[in-house]
Image 1 (cartoon, rainbow, N blue to C red):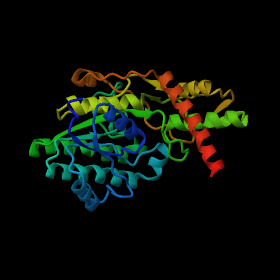
Image 2 (spheres, rainbow, N blue to C red):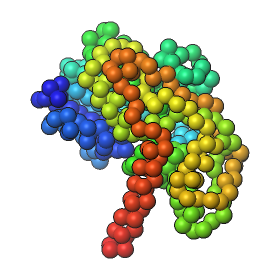
Image 3 (cartoon, rainbow, N blue to C red):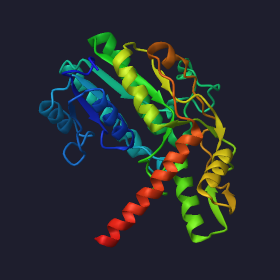
Image 4 (tube, helix red, strand yellow):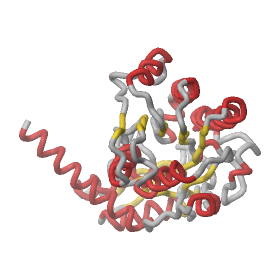
Length: 321
């Protein structure tokens, strides 16, 4: 509580999926002076807008969550945009932060920064031992440049910039648009809608063989804030749940939890993405006492329940409107 008292906190992406949980936890910790820039007011890709943001709000702490992000499909279709937007947002935000003497800058990276064939579980020391998986490499590399910047700026300018590497997030409030979403919300939507229609099958991308680690969004928010409070070193830190599950198993579990009993057809012409993903999360526990608390099945149930309720409320709004 005392850490956040009287601090002015800038949270980019605070209106987004992860950001909403970070804001909720900040308020519970007693933070009162929080500013969330909206894209309609501050285009963080534009340097003039970034400078204006820092003039309008003299932050003590910056938590940079904003990102251009999505699943394999949208990454594959927008490699240039994802590279440029993510790079420019982070580089400019950290540059002006150091000019203004911000106390601490928390940069959020991505598991997509890891090499395609990194040994499992991914250790922070493996980050530079190969090229990322091709479908999201531009995004992953743009975010990885924030680690380079954070370490270089710490060395030359003394800014307390830290870099965190969260694995694949999921949870209530996720993006369920089938054109841009990640795998879990896409599968939930397909299964729920197929069950409602009485459809006898759904079509899903890839072979189902790749493995992933999934990280409940509320746990991710807690990890970020613990690191902000307690971690002050240049080395990157993984944030995750520390387990591995195949996409095939995830699909079966979501089908069971949503009540979908039809056939699951795999479109193997679609890319699988990285073969395996799982983080070594021991550093986060050692450095700032973070451990994920939400089991995967419990997190999925909460996400499915939220999606069903969200759709119900959205339909009511459309009818009443």
